[in-house]
Image (cartoon, rainbow, N blue to C red):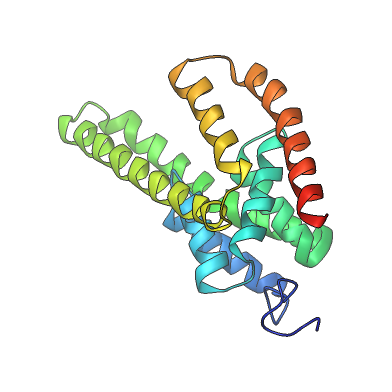
Length: 196
């Protein structure tokens, strides 16, 4: 029966977030994840507020990666538009971009004055390592739904893309040009085979 808890069509949210809730969520994310918002976006939207399922988050983020511009900025627009239309997209984008913009302006002024201090360079190096760790943890969380599905071509294509771009150093646009149509074709035939 549709709508029961054991069906995959169960809605991911019970209440649509208001514009104020979207603004507060994206301001909080942008301030928490200064320099790398994706881990905080996933934790806030999927784990804490439960406005999206893991699969919905992955789908929206995948779409954001194909749009021109920064992925998380595109994601904020996709998320806001999904729940509150154009106003939601504008509020989510404003909440995501404005606080870091103001902080960067202040940091730029301070760095111009105190940038030669050695302790500052060490602190920035440590922040970079912490951001890398957060990204790795988020990638693992985002990959779990793909692995839990069982034997699926999605992890294979993810590993192929990683090997081609990360190890072989092939240009990303050529790798995507080859893998995207191939993965769509394989997914179509796998899905079609499961229906039969």
